[in-house]
Length: 185
Ligand SMILES: CC(C)(COP(=O)(O)OP(=O)(O)OC[C@H]1O[C@@H](n2cnc3c(N)ncnc32)[C@H](O)[C@@H]1OP(=O)(O)O)[C@@H](O)C(=O)NCCC(=O)NCCS
Image 1: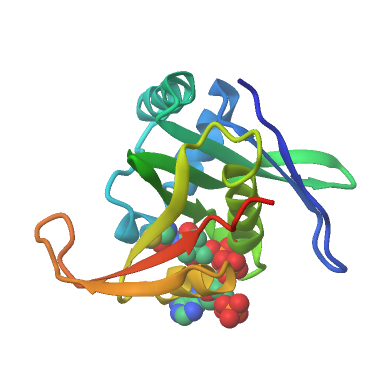
Image 2: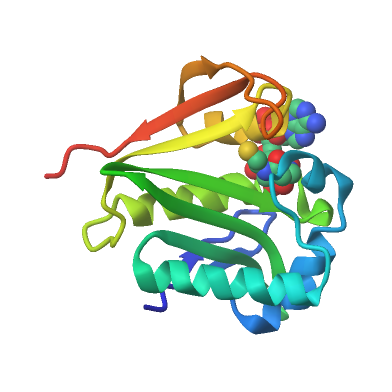
């Protein structure tokens, strides 16, 4: 399955294209993962091209198995498609629910890219022909990750619970935000 999700431009920002990760994105992936802020908040990081290829292959297998749907986010401006500068994923966790995750490259942050990309993926996941068997999407972040909390709020994921720390993987409390599938017509 090769899903492509276009996101319309805004008055000041180019359009986006979301599509499954490809082997050709390996360099962009390694480059984005050099950022200390990204490394601080993600549980797994990519250090080199071998890691990147392995990670991209596991995303490909996620699509094939219907268990994890991961998108690279590319600017689609006047000069055509740029390199991958963001990531949004939907991981099936349980019957009826799935978890979203995301990051953006340091150089494109603060422009609404994560929020626009996440909204596109949520609409796709809850859409009529979606392969995501979920009626609710969970979004988890560490309490100190204020940027991630803003993305959750901007995309209408309501705050459902404050989760206790679970060291060593999650050394601080977390927020569980949830967005429910709207009633189908
Ligand atoms: C979280 C992240 C994806 C946000 O990406 P982004 O493209 O900058 O997101 P957006 O521009 O859509 O929105 C960012 C919001 O966070 C706010 N923000 C950015 N940095 C912030 C900070 N340090 N403290 C508080 N708010 C912050 C922005 O002002 C914006 O809010 P606003 O709409 O009220 O102005 C990005 O910071 C990132 O990749 N972080 C590292 C990885 C990560 O934390 N992933 C999520 C794990 S749960």
